[in-house]
Length: 415
Image 1 (cartoon, rainbow, N blue to C red):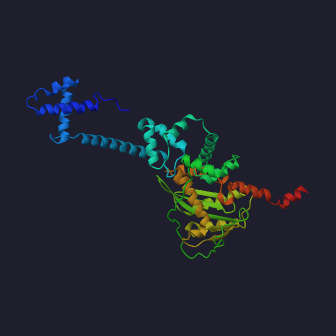
Image 2 (cartoon, rainbow, N blue to C red):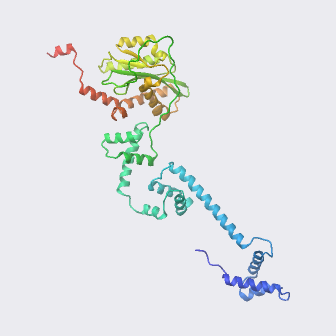
Image 3 (cartoon, rainbow, N blue to C red):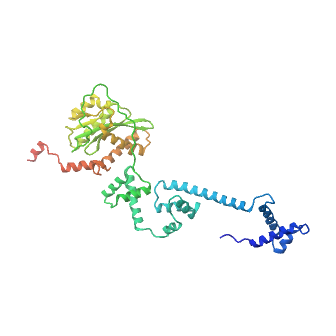
């Protein structure tokens, strides 16, 4: 409510009119302001200002009229309001970080943070005008009423969602977070996971394609393509795929070779190197063969599929495959679809570890991180292509349902 004026408008108009008329008569012109002011109880200087403003309004004296002054005050007020609204929208855009309407709880949190700077009513008015409906009464009601059962449950579930997301390299989206929570016995709907992750700013990692790095071997290659893009297997050690990818570090490029079992998507062998020599791919193969031998599993009869990279064409590599009793298979040159499963893992590896956890100082740092990643990938990461379970779990289930036959000498000893 505006403060009361010192003089009523009627008194101001009458005093101004009397002073103007008295000044028009030369005989009464002198001492007009003092005489009229004393008669009506008005300060002479105040009356003088009223008369001067009246003459300006009538066009008898240069200056800013009363209507112009009021318009200037209104324009200054509009400018202040616009500046405040722009500041509110900028801060809200940085706070919410999303195109969809944020939940009421998040809006209330924003108002709590900026209410002392902008005020509750201006914030609600600006957000409502921008399409985010929120009334001051809604804000105050939210602050005073006790939290609902859903809000309390959301807080509990959000703690679990943050835990699962952080424990899995921060790469899980809503689908895998939901699957992991269900595996742990947490009853929650997938849409609830999506809503809470969206509100908390959590999301899965995205993959991007990089340049092709395969260098074809020289000379003719008569090895057949035994896979023909059919990346399926009914048991472990039926089909392995191998490929090499690259990673950037501050110390230079690092190259990574992987060998993957198609049945379970398990990484059975891997190696990192600063060069693309044959030893890089051969070391990964040796690790894969050792992993299976150590578990008492034979790899004879295995089909090993790769591209026509010079590392896989090398005599030492093909001889090691023959020694292990594996059949060699290759795809066509420059065609990622002929080795799509291995390419897909390379894309995951670079998205979930190299870019997500980088940048990397050198090969030593990346090698330690890769060991941790492969251990997580094989034993704990939920894989969508095998029923949302880890690769090792799928292999354990297979071997439990299909026990290997005992060797002949062991059978005779039991008799």
